[in-house]
Amino acid sequence: MSAGSRTGGEDVELVINWGLGVDSTAYLVKMLEDPAAHGVDLARTMVLHELTGSEWPATRAHAAQYVLPLLREHRVRLVQVSRASRSLEIAVMDDSRQPERIVKRGPWALEDEYESNGTVPQQGGIRLCSLHAKGEVGDALVAEEIGDRPFRQVMGFNASEVGRSLRDGAASKNPLRQGVYPLIEWGWGRERCEAFLYDRFGVKWEKSYCTFCCFPVSMGAMDAHLERMRRHPDIAGRVLRLEYTSVSLNPKARLFGRRSLLEQFDPGRAADRPVLAAFEEELACPWALYHVRRILPVA
Image 1 (cartoon, rainbow, N blue to C red):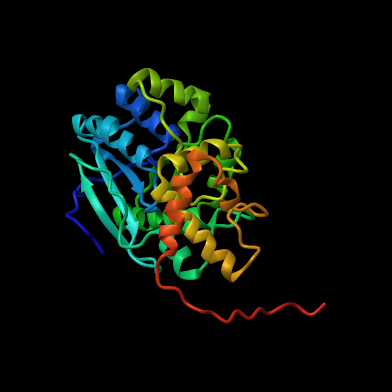
Image 2 (cartoon, helix red, strand yellow; image 1 turned 60 degrees about the vertical axis):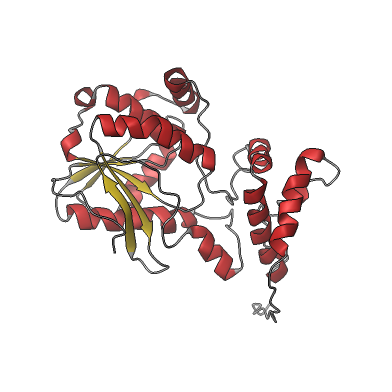
């Protein structure tokens, strides 16, 4: 399924995964300074943005303001793709060498799945949410676009994420795919990537992740996450409702394991009141009554 016209027509040899965040953006901007020096033929390159549907506004805005002009200048093909439904049907939301916007969401968003299931992301195990909303979608598009030709795929893992690159290589089921990890080769960690983008654009590039992500607590970024919530109380209210529904159906299904997002906001703190007010507004909606039955293993 396609939501727009397709550019296509080229023999794509290089796929660059762009998640809009610090690391992949730093690579993309640095590479565009001298594509040939980095072994990149832009005519045969596809930049791939897989939509989760719940990216933070500032991250989308920075990508649109600072990176899209570079892609237009160099006529780099940007494909923005989403899952079209819970089944593995994809929707190409934009495919252009003159991209004008970062698409916010497609017909299906990861939040829709949690909303309908009455649950929230889980911290344990592998990041199935990322595989479902990004990995499977990207793989389907690449298979459609490239077919049985060999190709390289740039992943924006930074120098401290060697383990992720090894897992990526081991998990790949496509023998024609060669994973490429330039930031690791350059020795660029997160701080180096942040500094590069700040020097280039004069802004602090914020981390890219879903608004309802459960991992800020494990990444040591909870304080920054809560500040983002306070800057966007409307978003915070929706995420609090998502967690509220989850906990109503399963008291243990909090967003941060033993800790809930709601516990992080204090009605006595002025900065938290707009968030809690937005949450109350979200609860002013039709409710439903469920009879929950659990199947427990025999001891």
